[in-house]
Every structure is written in structure tokens, then in C-alpha cells.
Picture (spheres, helix red, strand yellow):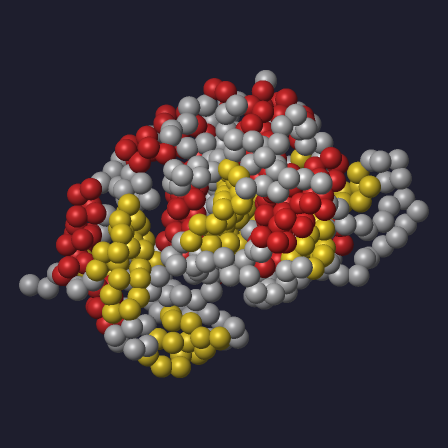
Length: 519
């Protein structure tokens, strides 16, 4: 009797817009896929409240990575079932991890298509050729309650970096001018704590391309009069630190390292390089949060794409990983996007960027920052047009989370962003990329800026701040820990008093945030 097959929930794929099939892939081509598994047990609402409720970090109870793996990792029996499934379809188990709840399988395209009942073809699109599929995946019925997602069959480019190089300055007035800033200057303007330097912390940075050059890192920090941070690289899924040219992804990599490292130079910077696919992206985040060697306490992510470009299984898996990170006291900072309220989608609708829209992400929006002649800040929503404006709006995939339930106006879904910082390329960040001095902006810069701040907070508090969102919308609301941005829009969304879907609660006032978290 034929084995009953069950659809993997959320695995539906469509071809990229304007992509055309150009023929089947070789049947003997070897491909690796990552299978994500259910946890041995789900954490209860009481468990989650211990590490993600509206209480100061001192009262939160986080799990160590070892404790998390033991309590909420995969069930060894489930991994054994996947291994038996692999053997049935002539697939090899490359590795498995109880902590990550994942099994990586390798096999020929023919074997994998049979195992998951799909068809793989080569597709041509504007950026080249990718291996793709259309439709759902299926698995044997007895595995449907074990497998939460299957990733890697399709290797289309999944995300884009959220940085923009400075254009010609826009305005010069009697009161303020468009000028770039070094990260230490922004840290001073935003009143970051000065008693520490992030020592004892590790900032994880996720990169899906590009690379860094040690000579540039040395030269940049020497120019700032700062001892260069300890920067280590971690290869995920055979990706590597591969610098090319300043106009490519190197700009993202160097921006992230230089901003986070200049704000918290005492922290270790661990850069996780992975392929730009949904599998590579997921594996990079999973590797970072479960990394017992570098043990990051904050993760900076400056890559993403409109929710409409993701599968539901991918979005669910990222949100689960971010939720797991909260259990271990790890803060996830994610850029909110650089293409306004439509997020670059041309269907006439409003879209938000993912993974910033995940409820357990600290979504980082963008402002335009100038300093008045008297020294006060003049900060508005960053908007130079639909292709150069902060992302923001409401998710169509995630419902309104509990921490946003009190927002006025009956939001339709999870609101983005949560907070903000300088992102306008015209008031951007001076960085060094491939031997060149450049000014770069975009919400890509805001994620490592906040990640650096979190490292400083963690050091001063003596305990990770972890999942900040419930605090920002709860006990910290009204405490003056952010600069409220009340002017400007990102297209469909308008800034106003309090939280808004352009800049969230606003840009940081670091010392006040530290004191509020202590109290």
C-alpha cells in the first residue's frame, strides 16, 4: 500500500517575478537540504514570561545554551526517524544537531525530488540563474508532526542588504546641514553610556555575501583612535569571507563591523558568512544563537526582503529561532528596509520587510539626523523617495503581538519598526570599504548601531537585556528613553507622537535607557 503523503505546511513556492524556466537540472546534481524539527517540548506561557515578560533584566531568568538544548532541543527519536527516512531515499546525513533542531541531508536532485515530491528546474531572472521549484513539498505522513520545514531545494537569492551609499547632500540651511557622522559621534549624540566599552560581550553579525579585509579594519579604527575589536569569522554552509569590490556586499559587511565595533570596541565581533538562500540565512542565525564558543548576546541582521518573497515555513522558522534566542537572553536587531512603505514591491500595496517583521525581532527603522547650531538634534523620518526611505508598516503574516495590543488605531498586524536611528545616506556613517572612505546609510546601519548599544547595556547591567520589545511597549514607555520622531512619513505611514509605523518609538537616548533598565 502506498505511503500517505502530507504537505509540509507553508512550503508553497512561486517562481520569482519575471523568472522563466530554462530547463531541468541534472538529475545527478548533489544538493544539501536543511530539515528543521519540532522541539522535544514546547515552552509554556509561564516559561516564556520568565525571559520575555515586562520586567527588568535583573528579574528575568534566562537559560544557558546547554540548558536550552537539553530542555527545548530536538528529540533524539525524531532525528532517528529522519535518518531512517534519509536511508529510504538514498540520502546521506551530513550532520544533525539537537540544539539547532536540524538535520542536514545530501543527495542527488533525483533522490531529493522523490523524497519531497517536487520538481527542480533552472530559472533565468534579472540576476542570473537559480535552481527553483513551484508548489508544495510533501513528506511521509508519519513525519508530518516531526518536520517543521525543508530548506535548500530552491537556491534563489533570498535577501538584499539594506545599505545605501551617500548621494549629493540635499540641503544647507542657516540652522543645520547634511553631514555624515562617525559611529562614535552618533554614539555621543545619542548619549550612549560611556562607562564601558562592551567588554565581555559578543556581537554576532549575519552576512550573506561580501567580506572584510583586515587592513581596512586596522586602518579604520586607527583613524578613529580606537583599538580595533577582535573580529572572528564563522563559515556556515561552506560560505566564506570573500571581499570583492566596494560597490558590492563588502559595503554591508564593513558597515556592520565598523559601526558595531566603533560603538562597543571592547566586544568581540563574530561574523557569520552564509549563502544568500533561505537555507543559508536560517542556518546562519541558528549557528549564531547556538554558538557556545563565541556566545553572542546580541545579533545584528541587515539583510531581508518583502514578506511576499518568503515562504510561510521560512517566516515561521525564523520567528521560532528568534523566540529561542529570547529564551537565552539574546537580542535580535534587524534592519526594517530601505524602500518605504511599499518595501520595493510594485503591486500598489503596502509591505513590510522580513525578518524585521518577526515579533521577536527588534525592528530598526531610519531617521534623518542633523544637529542644530545650538547642539540640539533635529530628527525626522528618513524619506528621500520610495527607493530611499525607511521601511515600516504592518505585517500581513504576523498578527498583532501582545506587546502591541495597546497601540491606538486597531493595527492590522505586527507593526514595524520598534525603534530607529540615523539611516539617511546624506547624514550617514563614514566607513572604510576596500581601501576607500565612503559614506553609507540605510537601516543596515541602524541594526549594528543598536546592537552596539545593547552590548554596552549588557556590560553595564551585568546581565543581558534580551528581548527588549515587551519592555519598550510596556514599562519603558513614557520614560523618555528615546527621541520621539514626530515629523515626516515613509509613504503611506505618518510619524506622530508616540509609536508610529515609520520610526517606532524613535532613536535611542542611551544613558536614560540604561537607567530605566536598572530600575
